[in-house]
Image (cartoon, protein in one colour):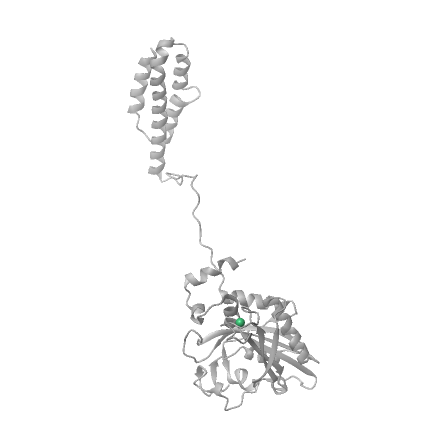
Length: 345
Ligand SMILES: [Zn+2]
């Protein structure tokens, strides 16, 4: 009895081949539903004799598996034919990862420096990269015969003209001039940006690099303020206990001028290759803003005084990450850039 039914239904299942959703659903209800044929057959099976159970049990299970397999395969086939979005998709597989970008090391260092000076009330100021002679040289006290005005050192865009020579700025000091011209003291600002020099590209020099300068102008600003500000900056950037020293220097736009060294970050002063066994590493130039510069920008130099400082962002990044070749910063090699991923947050 039961065997006959199974044989008959097996033939029906094998003959069934439509993938139409509604007919397939009817098939499911008919065979696999809670009131379906398989349920009925299993109910009947309970009543057969123990001898029959042994032979029929296996047949019954195979019949059930056949109905389920038929339904699944037709359903999948139908889904793919319709191009359903879940067709053939295994939702239990892990998702595809996506690449997270990294911040450029120069951007990281720039941000770190800006954050330190922000705590002291310094804002960020910006200016154009194409500058005229006045903002890049004359207002900053560069004498006519200064070598920086030479074609050998600077990229000129236009010689002569209404506003004098036009060039790619050679330093971010031009932003200081613009700020002082258009505002009133007190000034407390940082000027980060890209600058250009006519240099052959090598591991140690590039035709463009990045500077960050600072300017503080107010009444009674002294060299002691300059020293304390930079001392604080160095402790924040390189850690407590980092020593500083100032060496007399010369810049056209500051008087007096100095260069600042810090105790070597690698050997802590004992002497190593980085500091050329001196124990000291130069990191920036600074000085009191020359009264001529203040006057050039329309500021009363008898009432106001100020200090300025400037450093190369590449230089600071080199010391921080021990990068030996400057060219890496501008080549966009992802093998280099991806190393800064961990510093993303
Ligand atoms: Zn050293």
